[in-house]
Length: 235
Image (cartoon, rainbow, N blue to C red; front, side):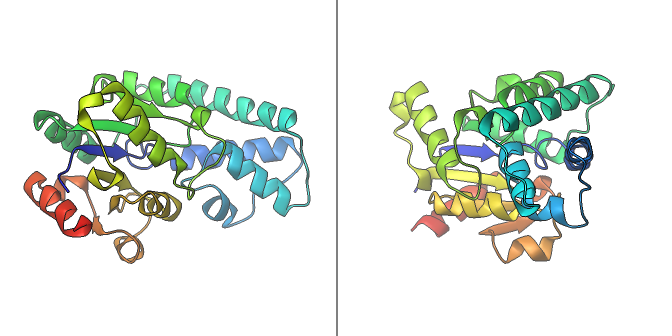
């Protein structure tokens, strides 16, 4: 299949903010009289929406919360995240990702962000990083009722792209996904897409076992090789 679209995860692929998210989740839990235990963030949160993360941690601790209360926790964390970003003069954007986005843009491939983060967070970062014009489609946590590793987010991205560009006739197999976590890689593969794992969050050797292809930095990806790779994995 020909490569027609590149779909980017957000946290850990475009912006280096996982530590900030961990700190904010920890603060939410402290306000609930709970301490974030070692390894819990990686187990329950990496690559997943705040809602799924908090639900699983609280359930693991024997806490049952209704949807309304969970909405309040997510809102509190989101507001704190936005406040933190506004206080940062230069956002920690991955420069290798910016360069790769520029290369994709020059080759007239469609791009989308596919993330469990809320749309307001994604749009804020893309605007501040001067990347908003690069992405015609954003699939955010607001659009979903499930989180990665379910494939729904990536399949929805295909649906949105086909709605915006009817002539594209995009299939999942014609998409390349850029991911940095286990749950994200699994979601993309379950959607029938080729996945590049970028070692921003986990070591190369851990992602290599799961992704179709793995790199330390996206600057290592050459477009011709990317197109060839997509054909190899979908034929």
